[in-house]
Length: 226
Image (tube, rainbow, N blue to C red):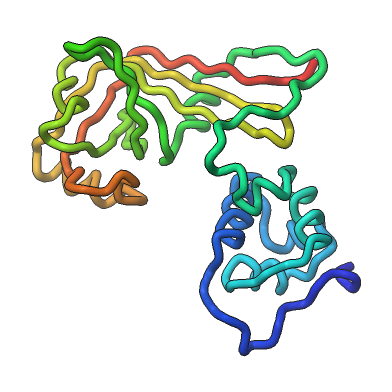
């Protein structure tokens, strides 16, 4: 196993994780695979998987194809050539159907952090904003600007939606939570949220105003093949 796959380049190769390495690591973790398990699937050495994820490696096409197959995705997804396109161009599965997700499955899919969307009504009409979120207990928490449209939604009912689209497998799921938006002003609560946040908001700027959505209704659906 691994005798026909590339081996790590010499130690003098450029250091620094590449975008490809980050995508490989993220997809591997999404599938719940260890580096050793991915190596076994792809026919590569575990040391090569580690090198690819941690350093600026440039694998050949054959290695990329093997990794894409093992990660149940495409070379285009790993290479990042689809980042500017909306998800979902894959061919639909034969006999596909939607099935309802259980409450526990919804919670498991949403936790613990990621990018979702907040839908709410403004004075100009409906609006939907993407947010980096974190699950804190029963609440969904996110940061925004203190004087923005999202902050003005405090005290109103909003919808939070998060989904995952797998173009390579033509599958996906979507979870929606409906509840009241609340502005967090208590210093201790803000410190707790700062501690559990995995990332600063991608949009940048001064987005330090924490808000939460306390769901009163959670539903989800998943695309499966009959």
